[in-house]
Structures are given as C-alpha cells and as structure tokens.
Image 1 (cartoon, rainbow, N blue to C red):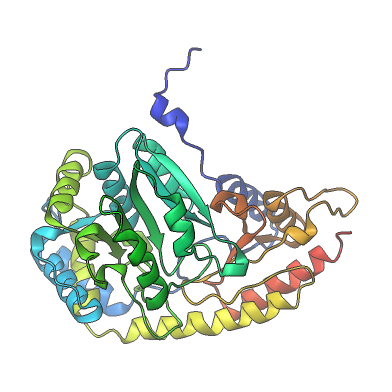
Image 2 (cartoon, one colour; image 1 turned 60 degrees about the horizontal axis):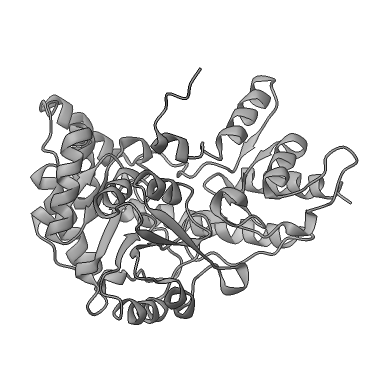
Amino acid sequence: MDNILSDRLNRLSPSATLAMSQRSNELKAQGIDVINLSVGEPDFDTPEHIKQAAKKAIDDNFTRYSPVPGYADLKQAIINKLKNENHLDYTAEQIVVSNGAKQSVCNTVMALVSSGDEVIIPAPYWVSYPQMVLMADGTPVFVEAKIEQDFKITPQQLEQTITPKTKLLILCTPSNPTGSVYNRNELEALAEVLRKHTNVYVICDEIYEHINYTGEHTSLATLEGMKERCIIINGVSKAYAMTGWRIGYIAANTQIAKACNKLQGQYTSGPCSVSQKAAVAAYNMPQDCVEQMRQAFERRKDLIVKLAKEIPGFEVNQPQGAFYLFPKCSYYFGKTDGKTVINNSTDFAMYLLEQGHVATVGGDAFGSPECFRMSYATSDENIKEAMNRIKQAVSKLH
C-alpha cells in the first residue's frame, strides 16, 4: 500500500519507552514481579482536599464546556501563585490553561516555530521536545551537557549554538531526565548571552519546580530583561500528584498567550472543567502536602544515590530536583553475560528488565546514549530491592 500518512507524521519517532513498557507488561502477564522505575509520575495519591473540590465541582454542575484558556478563578489562582512564589506579575490574558503541561509546551512550539527555525535543546532532554519541534517543521539543535558538568549547558556552549535562525531555547529546570537544577548564578550567565540575541525566546519548563532539594527555585523570567521573552510552563501534575487530571499552563507575553489561545481553540478547546476546579483548590489551599511529598522524594533520592554508587561501573551525579537518577552506564558497553551483548544504553535497560526484572529507560531516548534513567517515585522498599536486582544483574556482565 502507498504511504498515505503525512510527512509530518513520518518525521516523528515512536515513543522510545514503548518497547520497554510493552516487554514489561509481557513479563508481568507471565507472573513475574517487575519493579517499575521507568514511569515519570509521583506514586502518591492526589491529596484529599483536592479530590473533595473535584467532587463538589461535579455536584455544582461544572460539567459544561470551559473557556478555551481556562476558568477565571483558576487563572487568578495561577496569577497569585506566580506573584507570591516567583515574584512575577501577569494578567489574566497572559495565562492559558491547557490539558497538561505537555500541551502547553506543544502549543508554544506550534505558535512560535516556522519551517527552518532552529530550536536549541540541551541534551539530555525530555523525549518529546525534539518531536514537537519536528512537528512544527522546525530544526532541533542539540547542545550536549555531560555528567562532568552536572548535565547543565554553559554560557559558552549557548553562545556558540545560537545562529540567525535560532527562534527558541527550551530549558527544563529541575530537569527530566537528570534532576539537575540551574541556580541563579548559572541562569544569570545564560541570560547574559540571551540579552545579546533579542530574537531568541525561551520555553522555561518548570513543571518540577516544587520537587527541589536546593532550597530555592529561580525562574529565568525573573532576571533582568527576560520576562517578555520567557514562556513559563508549569502545572499541577508533579507537585500535587495530579498527573491524570491533565492541567498545565503557560504564562507569557500577551502576544504569545493570545496565539496559544487561538491555537488551542481550534483543536482541543478548554481543559476539563472538573480538573480545573481541583487545580484551584491545589493552588489556593494550604501547601503542606507539597512539602511532605518533596521531603519523601528527597529521602528516596539520598537512598537511590547511595545504592547506585555501590554498583561497580556506574558514574552517578547528585540530582538536585525532580525524581530521576541518570547514571552513566557506558562501562558495561561491549560486555556480555554469554548470551546478551550490551551495545548501548537501550540494550542495557532491556538487559536489566529481562535479567533483573527492573524497568528503566535507556538514555538514547533522552539524547545521552551513555546513560540510563531511573525514576525513584516509588517506595523505599522498591528502591532497595530494585538496586539489589540491578547489582546482581550487572555482576554477570564481563
């Protein structure tokens, strides 16, 4: 049959985690106990007061179409949050609420990027960034930040990568997949470069803002001259354990916000009405639950880092946010257990699944083929058992 699919679709790669999750499910179906460290979501339940707000919204008949950019009370709650926590002032028309932060990123890319525009993406990166750029006919340009530099790009790297075609920089801090956090001084150094290139805009993906172990989150938008050129992406998924509720947002200059509103109006319209009312409660009510979950993640981080450092051949950095560890595993490339040869990090992750029954994700998918990603959004017991299994599995490689 002729290829009937669009060029746009043919440019995209399938989700790199698909083979891993499919094989993981096959093993589970055979009754094998697989510990899943591949999933990027909190293992906590949504806090009770947020669920109660959603139930009340149903009883109050918030069951009809919502405004395209979100309910006014949710936009106000977001404005208050940005003012109180980030010291940033936005108006209601500068906020657009979407079906998760993922749509917020995609809206922004589709609204700003034209054919031939270049988008700078520091690697390691979240798997969807380059695919979104390709979907918009743009050109992803990768800047490699190795484990030796804590997976953070330098001002020199940024300067060398910007060309007359550069439209966007996508900056995720705290980072998925590495857990790295850019501090104020590091962001100021990047801002110094960006001030010289006034046509470059920045997507600031801050979805992991509250899962931070440094004591401070700095938004690039707070630095001199940067607010008008930054599009802040955030949402309730990670901080409030609300991944399935699908509420994210952008905060941007009026022109960009209106463009995203126009775009969203044509292909999804407004986000779920009930989820929005739950999000209002998340932002407006006491934030104790956020800190309790952050503390649990920090404890787990310390545990998994300690255990990973005990595994021969791993190079491990100290994540400062999010809930991922991204060890370098290239020591094992070329090694074999007599049956399987490890050629790359995808092979390594599949080997850990087959032999250790631990699901992880190879770093190839994140633009760092010498590493692999583990999520520690799971119990201490699971982390201990998983790391023990990984240690046993790699001991068979020679």
